[in-house]
Structure formats: structure tokens, C-alpha cells
Length: 288
Picture 1 (cartoon, rainbow, N blue to C red):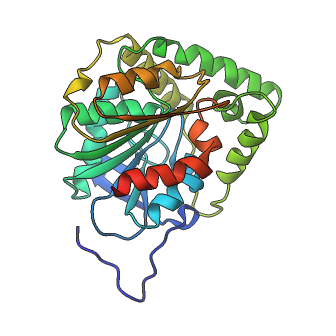
Picture 2: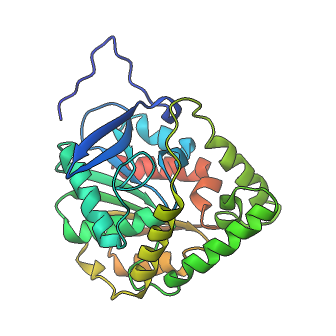
Picture 3: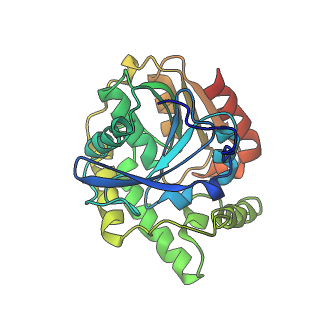
């Protein structure tokens, strides 16, 4: 895509101010946001379970958008995107492919978290030529040990959170200790920094269908990730209750040449708790 920025149009590098856009493709209208300089290979962000455009930590997005064209999007049936959420990760990857190619891109870098990382793996297995670099955080491979238990953990923590009127992510993404609790509160607060033009919330039905797809992914046959040639950065906290941390090590073993970072005393949201350390690493990896 050509560089459409002229001198009087400043480049937006703050996710809180990224314009909300939409594009129709394959009978679905996809909601997305873009920021950063519109040149070169874009970094497409794949979001987590139950999340919409409003769930990306600006402390991760903004540093990457400083020098890169960043695109975040709602997959089919999520947030302001139309249609129904498919019940398999592979179908979600097909929708992501439809969205990316509708924007006119034939090469992207991927930044993914949790469910987004599963979709990203399915995408790169099916369309290896599309993806140049891969960032997989808080995620695990198809057939990964205990992925099928994500639903149980999630419902349990949603219940625990509701009893204290907290955000479920405080329980699901962070340790409930002296380090984790303030990190959780700070993260949830950062997600509120965008005050205008916020996304539509995810529906209960969409969320339940995503959980079903994750369960199916956990019980399916492993994909052959040894074929992956993309430079890959894998990161997580050392105590991930949602997608067990050992699965990051499993991915690291399966994807040759991949880099692995495990942050101490942190959970599923380790990259958000350690954003000061992680963001520069991600920026450097994507810029290489």
C-alpha cells in the first residue's frame, strides 16, 4: 500500500487516538484501527479471548507504532465486526486472512496474545508466505497439554472476580500477590485511556463460541510447527493459569530458532506486567 501521509497529516502513534475504521470482505464488515507510519510491512495484532479493540495495552502498542504501521482488528463476530464467531481456530484464521488480504497486504508481521496466538499459528501454517515474523505471547500449540481446561479456569475466575466486583482479567492475567495485584489494577486502568469511539463489547455468545474453539484446539492433533521458518519471539509469565507456561516452552522447542522469554513472578499477562522490559524487546525483534 502506498504511503498516504502528507506533511500536514501528522502520524498518529498513540493507540488511544487511533482512528476507528472498517472494511467489508466476504460478507463481513471488519472493525479495525490503524496507527503509526503507513509504510513498509504492517504489524497486525491478534487479540485474546473475550477481547475487542479496547483490550490492547497501549504500553505495548505505542512503542511498536512509533516506527511501524500497526493494525488491530476485531475478527468476525467480535466487538464491532459483523457476523458470527466461528467455532474453530482454523476458521478464525481464514477470516483473519480475508481481512488482511482485503486491506491489500501480501506480507505482514504478526503480534499475538493468547487466543490470538492460536489463530496466528493456524494462519501461518496455512499461509506461510503471508507472515514474515511472528510474536506469540501467552499462547500454546494445537493439542497442547491442558488447553482444553481454559474454559473451566476462565469461568471460575469470572465468578471470583464478580464476587469482588473486579475485572476478571485481574484474576486471569495476574498473580494474586503483592506484585500481581497492583500490576493488574494498572493494566486495567491503561485499557481505559481511550475515552472516545470505544469498541462494542463482546457478546456472551461470541465469548462462549471462542471458548468452544479453544477447547477443540486443545483436543486436536498438533500441527507440524517444525515447518515454520519465520523468526519467532515467544513470551509469557512463569505462572500462566490460563494457557500453562510450559506450552510456551513447548512452542519454543517446536519452532526452530525461536526465542523464548519467561518473566518471573507473573501470569498470563506477563508481557503487560513487564511492559517496560518487553516492549523494547518486541520493537527490536520486529525491526531486525
